[in-house]
Image (tube, rainbow, N blue to C red; front, side, top):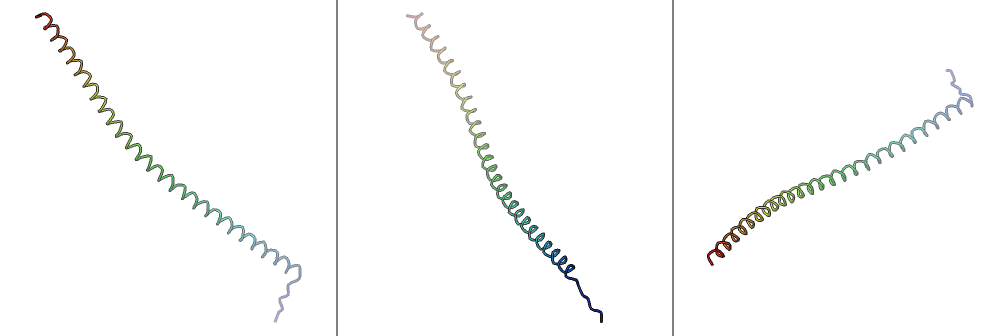
Length: 102
């Protein structure tokens, strides 16, 4: 049987490579954990932004409805002003007619 003997230098080189590999794996796991934490934070931020966007959308709808109602009110105000002017002119004509009679 052949004996497989490894020299001390070869063993130390192999040990060094194993330690480097372990360190590399440890750094990769830490980097992966950090990346996963960043992804989770980004997903939370995205969810918050979506919720905020939905609220803003609801606010926009409400403001548009108010604006439409305001536009309707403005139209009604203008209509009432025209009607008031018409009535004022008729009253002035009636007063003029009454003055002519008197």
